[in-house]
Image (cartoon, rainbow, N blue to C red; front, side, top):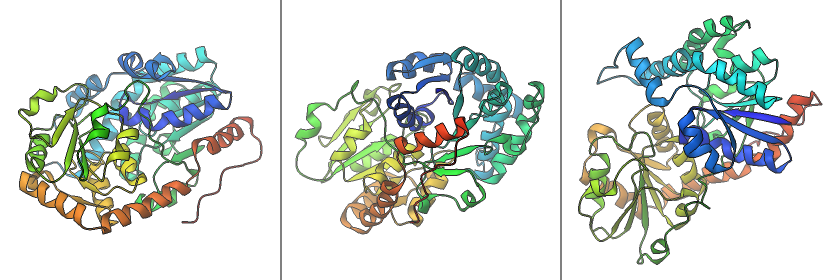
Length: 399
């Protein structure tokens, strides 16, 4: 079987798909990725996959969305954030990407397309080619309003390629691979009849970037990992306030600023604070007792999978939903942007480390994650979809 994976050009969209792609390869299938040209060169190919340039860069897609729909207000609601996302992914990014995906699927002779849950060009291209497509989530399901608006916006693109438009962009036609543990997931997942659980597995290519020796040589005491991911890591003063709040505390602090930021921007550091551009989370989290992050889906689920409580500093998009959900489960504490101060960070970290409840409740989510079918188990489901054999999906765990 030849599989074409396609995603929005971002680590948070690509990394969750890699474990399944690796499982497909291990099972003897051939896998390629299609995404923006620069991301192909910088990320996809170094991860070991054939890559096809397809679609707009994220910067261009964002700029065109602003040009077409206007600049969001400073006090934008979360509903408007979802609307902006639907407009960018379905109304702006999808139409020009379809042609590239059709060409890539033809050249690759793809039998199946697997796409991230915001790549609305993929179902159009797959339908045009007459092959099945499978959605791959990277976190909790977006609200119905997002899918409805996106479906309306992408409908003209379906028609332009000679295929009948479907509600919600046909994102739930065949199969939706759901990496979100049940207790963390939106109740709206019950409406998705083709949802198939898939255990989230961390990927960050540790062979290319092993942990530096100093991580294993840190002094005694809890270790706190701080990251804002790779998209909102430039949010003004967020990392600076966190670092100030944790300076000279009774803990080791490891901060990653992202490949496009200079650690020197954080200025002179206290002795307990260590800053790097990038460290592989799959290795680093083994040394940590607490994670301070932006509530991005990848980092949040990776921390929960290791029973680590979270201090969440949401900045954009689905981060606010993730933060609220983690707090509701008792696995974390949220500081909203207007309340972020060094003192608030220090108080929250102290409480999360001193009280065992957060780790216990994060551990409950970790148990759920461990019970979900892994990538290798789900490969058989994809083969079944393509070959038309009897359904052999791994059963959803009752917990």
